[in-house]
Length: 131
Image (cartoon, rainbow, N blue to C red; front, side, top):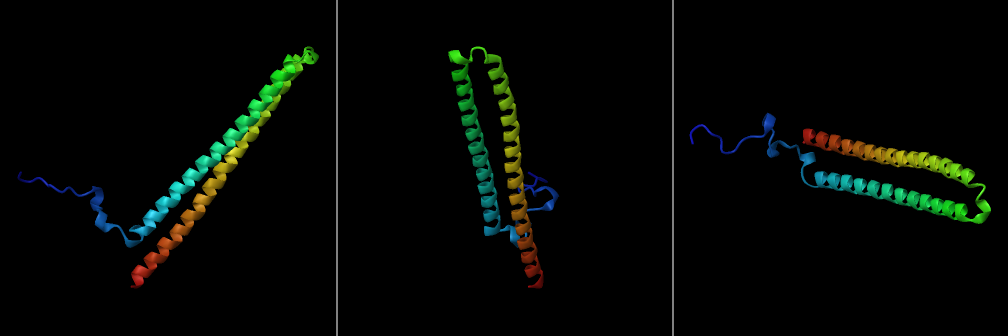
């Protein structure tokens, strides 16, 4: 075929050969590995926190049912119900705060690692320009 390019170039003329040396080889692999490890760690922390919260809430719900079924608390059922919802609202708001803390600490750790990677990139770039 006349006039067709069998090997199209990527957008903006950037190809794999134009990638600077700091982005080649182990630096990229280690960065991607750290990113995946951090994401997996954050996911596990969220799951652990959510499961411990769910366990606590289920125990409180079971305790509520046991108290409301007991003959001694027949007159207090409305107070028990109000107490259950009050504690549930407080627990859910505390849990939302814990989840936000986990997200903030994960973001802070990612920012620290990115800053370290930025320093490594700048140092490698400086070494390349000197050499």
